[in-house]
Length: 451
Image (cartoon, rainbow, N blue to C red):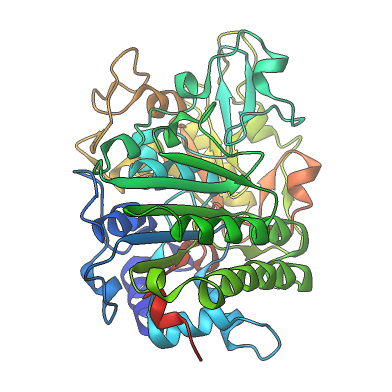
């Protein structure tokens, strides 16, 4: 059952014009890890979960293995397009819709991997873990960095270029991995590309039983099947596939190259899970397919903000006296501004560009980065004390350091200051339907096998 009518319900409840806001506490991506672990009765306390009807018609009784397949950038609209076309091989999608339940969720904000991956490993909203986008400013080095790989703008490891730079966990986020709190009888395995596998730098995924690196989707699928068929005992397996997202950025979400990457991922999973995994294991395995965000197709026509005075003339300065550059990402430009300049900058942005802006008071009032009550973000792991820029005792240091004075979200384009980003065709991080609706598909693996 594919619940397209539920997508309409989400839009009626959470859309304001063409901007779709997160359904925090309801049908939202933040509830994925807690919901998946709850099928094993292994979810830590205070981790958000999804409404129970995401498992409607799915037999979760006696499940011993849960597999979460996160296909980066594969939004709900992309799922529907792929399943409904005649020219793509999407057996896995069709069987999930016919024999399981596919429920649309909203992404978190920002709708991007740099904020969503900490969420999937911690059960914390961005307002709690504090990693608010792909780009963040690190005051200790006076530079903005790419957060998820922790590299400079040129792609070099931050701590090689700046030997005195703090570890990511000391500056980018305040995140407590949920794996240490998972029921001890459950083995947790994380399957990721080799270049990002492990928790050496990104400690928000620390504490898992096993980290498995792979070179491509086919190898990952083989490793996943072998793990399921291996030792006995309850297993939670998380697998991350970046291929669709990467192709969408380069070519666009509807391009032939992106379709080819999707077919490669789905084909590998079909072969290893639907065709080769033993019936005995499949009968005890729950499969979940989800995504952190979708993509909006900009056609490569983005907004170059280099030289745009209302931004660059009003930026706040860091400890070194230099301006703090725009951070966040091109679909959610975060600005740290000089005192008494916020209203002038937002007026200029909304006058010159097709965008919406949110001051800190406004985005915290609506809980844009996650639920905030009375000026404080709540939830497990929040609050490490210390010198909080914004004064909230409950928010972690990272959120307080990163919380911008103004957020600018273009209706459908990117706004940035480097050629690489400006040349991207597929983009995400913003609030369009295409970015904000994501799938949560669930089925017993044995129900997906056979013709």
